[in-house]
Length: 256
Length: 264
Image (cartoon, rainbow over all chains, first blue to last red; front, side, top):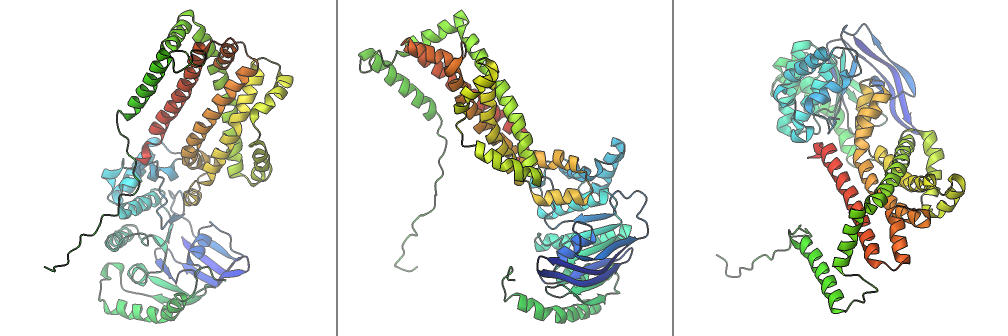
């Protein structure tokens, strides 16, 4: 399934946050959306998945989701959004509960999803007992359980420490090789974008506009530190965002 | 090693009151001993205060004649029925205020206006409406319990993590399920602390309503004993009310422990 955004324009009151953003995410590719904080990238992700309505413009999908996909557009949130009074398994089961299926089928999907993120043995733990990296893997398992066509990831690694971040990036690369999922990956972190993005969409500061789209042809499995093509891509993107990042550092976050 | 070593003074510690075992029971024993000695040596006038033994005898008497159960039964029935009516409707209205803009704009001002009324002032009106019997007492207690439960419920709903609701919506979970699985459990801690406040308000109103017009009930018994200068029965009634309040608080504590186990 492809995801297509056409001429997205979005305003909060008088403030324009996104200006004529057009974007196509092709089946099987990871598109990283990179931009400084406050550039509207989280808003763009919410518009893409239907959590908000654009002021003008249109978001559509093309092609069919897999037959057993229960929620074609599925989010993974920065703060994990796990329910604290539910165990790991119960959290993963939540999006399956309102779908008619036998309880065996439900348990099978939960067990399968937890196994894929290597959390099978923590099925009965509560979120407060887990580290940040484990919590995000639970939330990835919850997304896997509904078998999405497209993952919408909102800074999924930003709340984690550097080590967990590295490990989880490896996990995401492994999962991508297993299923070739489609994803929109929003981040403010250049290294994550270069590591995971087949294409990197660079947004400008508010109002967010697409400044450039950079394709990286190195296969995900081969992306190691020091790869010359990645260094070149990083340098090119850094030259695009550096001035804006510096300017953003000199103003108040909520200045109008 | 430098010669001018000065130890860095300790400045931490903060305020951390600890629970010291045996101090609680010892305080009760000390009060009891003062009471006992005072009444026996005559520092405390026998008209003002009976001896502890007299109070105990009055209690045992009431148990043996079955009077205690008659009064306590009547009181408990009023507290439970009135509390249930007020509590359940309070939670429903509170959830409506927490979830719907229309309810918030219409019901919230009304509840805010009702909240400061001392509900016992409405008992005469309820007696005109419902008669001197049980209904007017149920109504007073229900009304008193209603507003703190509304406020606890809508505060609890407002306090539910918005990210969890957005997550649930992003998975296409139906609204009814979101309320049952996320909003209700998320509001539960606030609801339970609301029940604590509502229960103590309920006991105050129960006693007051029983003093205004009831044949049976702990409040009626306390008032009648006062009128007859039977201070032993009066104090016994007050002790029963204290025990009633403590029992309710203990039961709510037990429910909190089981229901909120996930907080660890």
